[in-house]
Image 1: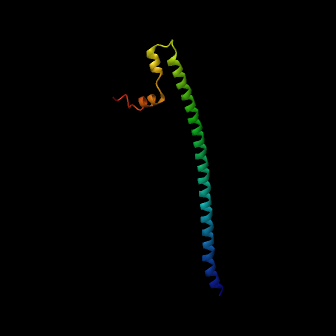
Image 2 (image 1 turned 30 degrees about the vertical axis):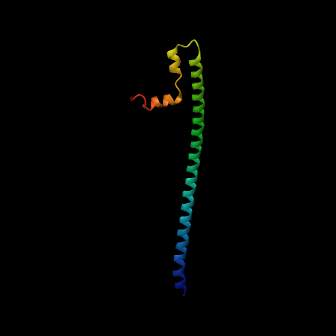
Image 3 (image 1 turned 180 degrees about the horizontal axis):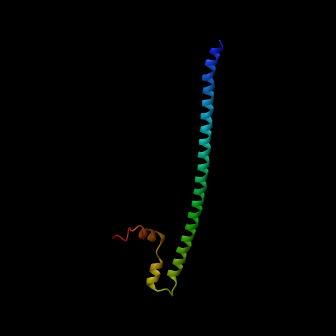
Length: 100
């Protein structure tokens, strides 16, 4: 009778140990994924702040160029060049207009 209990007990113990190991491994993977997600979110927020800062700088530069191009002492060819908008610069950089 005790041999029968031992035979039934060992698989149950192995099953419990295996289940515990699987649960611990799953918890560790979930914790690692959560840390990685927190890092990605922090990087995303930092990049968004950088983009907003660059957008403000571009807007200030565009305003400065508009002011420069409308000043009476600036020659006409310089004024036209200074009046490029950000969209114009993007098109030039992307070579959409340079290929023509």
